Length: 101
Length: 316
Image 1 (cartoon, chains in turn green, red):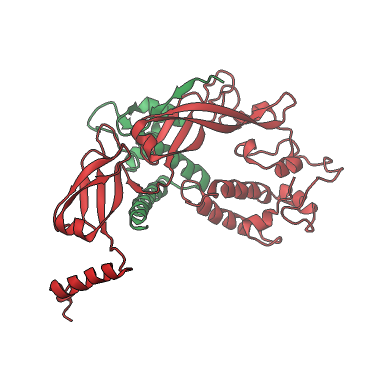
Image 2 (cartoon, chains in turn blue, yellow; image 1 turned 120 degrees about the horizontal axis):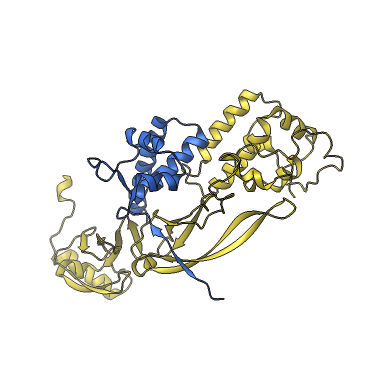
């Protein structure tokens, strides 16, 4: 069977999404994204600019934030804390793996 | 179809109060949330708990579930009683939250298959709605991150047939894995999620990259680690050794007097990308066994001729 090979966008630090694109990808309002920025969950690439841009990893973070908020009923401060702790666990887990045979 | 014991799933007694049910749910939801839990079956458990809570939190649904009786055991083959259809107001309106496809056949058999197309849009409101995003994991080898690869992935997606029943449809996609991907990164395939309602756009498909554990390499971000066994004489005298890298073997020079656990950096031999990762070679000095007379004699000769006390700093 001949199948078309799909190419997606790799959501890394190198791609940038506008506020509008980020909202669309999250099906969220701009206000919600702004709240995430104010809470420190997301950081625009260059916050001095009038039009915010976000890295691809921000989309991943925003999705996780949305699921935590909806599924566990967390408020934004709780989401921010959970995300920070999850990052730390991931970092420590990677370090731990490198010591295990 | 297997009977599901919702009380057992939530770890509560059959006479638990609504408050106890809520508390049990909150606790389990935090424990098994797929973004939080690292357990392999977290997503399945999370959905199972969600389904149990969906039934038990609603006194009406709970009452009808209880009517099935306490004699059923989890996993027992289950068919709803023949007169089951009668007299439940919620019949057909079962899925108050979430996605019908997330619930088990057992749930559907009791709380309704009257799941219509319009229900999908319930979260976003009727009319034109954006299709749901889909998430899937793709396992790749470290070598794939160096060279890029194509993976075909099979997705189960819910579809509503002509009579309004929810079925699972299999779909296979061939996806390009770009060179330079890292553990945990996501690839977004726009428009490959669920179709939208009305004029709503289709959702997106997100693929999360996960590396298969490698037999010799360990990955940390875009850096790669290799433990390299060396002989005592290679470490003591220095040597040029052939060292494997995911992109093919290279020659590595070991300086004389290299200790065990020394970290040697091979610049830009980690995962490629705009900022190349590095490959770290960590030396591990291994001893040849003293399992022959000749080997024993050599060790004894060293013992006699080398004045070496590795414990001199320990004060004993």
